[in-house]
Image (cartoon, rainbow, N blue to C red):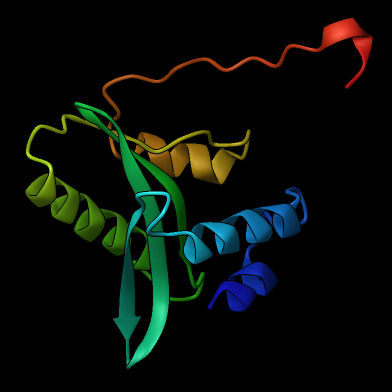
Length: 132
């Protein structure tokens, strides 16, 4: 499913998707050691979306990865909704779901804003010594 996402995602050209893939695969390999939780959404017996995250602090859970097959309508909202329901059952003290950075991509920003976030934090990049 990850390979299908890479081929179909319209933003993968703008991102260093192969570094993201390597990071995601490492997260899957070291899932238990990292204290990750995840979910998979199936349609017709095939995986169409998955997500990974972990508790960040007492009242916050962070979702690191959420991927879905682009042409399966509703796969992203469904994996999000069901994973958040699961998190709230497992961690009733969680008040916030940190969905991380939108990477400057408009479609990701719109999707995240559609969940009516309690807050959004402005991000900056600092460069030491004038070198990137």
